[in-house]
Image (tube, rainbow over all chains, first blue to last red; front, top):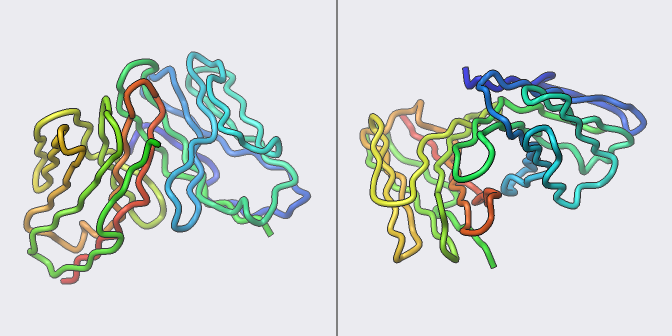
Length: 113
Length: 109
């Protein structure tokens, strides 16, 4: 148990669907991250929230829309995705500022048909 | 350019062997992380270090700041060590982590 949970663990969606990924951390952290992991590629940082404000948007297409309602929860809203968006989406959390360890969730395996 | 390179990309060994995975980076860092990713995707942080050496059970991580190089060693390897091992660094002046492509380790009984 890492203290960071993600739901759902697996998601299959069509290109016209709208779905959301959820991340929750129970570690008292104040920074949360979304990463994308595609086959045979390094993890790619998508978004960073620090103290519930978005501080990083790594040139991610607008069909991905993050939301951080409080320091414990992070969502990734998905709409009109493409098959190349199929990947493992990982959430992580840490204390903000300085050099702190990031704790990862189990990931959501997304398949876009 | 801020880069992280890992070697080897794939490693297969017999149970009990001593394992070494390498990570090199291009410029000065404030911290280096070793992560373990099991099939199914979940990532576990093994070590965070900025100098010297750390040990946890059968795992040892070392870093040479002058040579911009880190190694992860596994002693008395076991099939349950089979996973992808990922090196990630925080380059100085940048709070983001930059990840290597990972080393896929398979330990055969």
